[in-house]
Image (cartoon, rainbow, N blue to C red; front, side, top):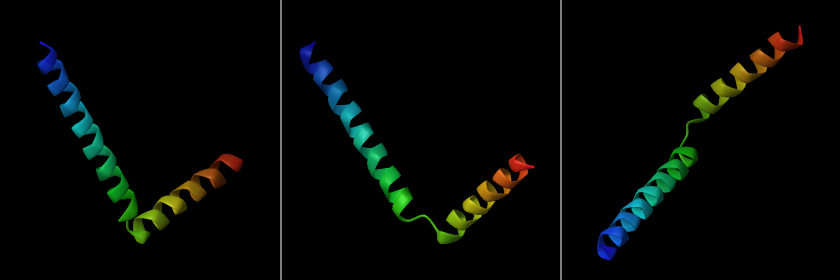
Length: 51
């Protein structure tokens, strides 16, 4: 039974590590066009809320 629990913890750690690596790579390789589009949307929303 103890070995089964260790396998589950190992798989969980591997899934967490994979998710972290994926998130870091997505953030690092994001396109400048997408970032600029997101900033434009945020600016437009703030302008609408001020009026």
